[in-house]
Image (cartoon, rainbow, N blue to C red; front, side, top):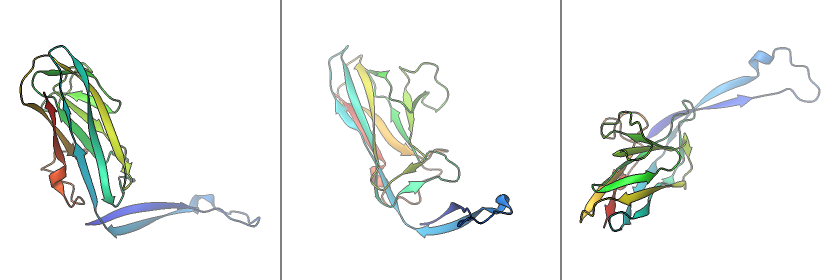
Length: 179
């Protein structure tokens, strides 16, 4: 994949020279690169009796070989999404994660939402790994219940604006298995 990015360079005069026009002390250089970054996500397996709370860890990883960043816009590189499994309720939410309705709309309370979108930084190095630890209470034991874990572009949905730099989309989804 070919990517355009920019590099801002500031310069200052040296050896006691006087700067006659400080408005022209920088330039922008457009850089093109052909590279890939394999994003992946892993879910978790949790268990508990009705009323018990346990930790669920969802992990994003950039497997490289390249780092990736939205340096110009500052937008997050991706969002890790959790669709909460049947019979459970999220009681503790990690920083950077926002509660949502299933359709992605505003959800009033921080806990108890059916979906959570967790934003990553605007850049991830080739070996970046970030774990989002949720507290999940089992309200009703539902054998074989699973929640969905997936990676999405910061704007739009996965199928509408795929990660064209990612050579392996098969590891962009996982499950949160309960009991």
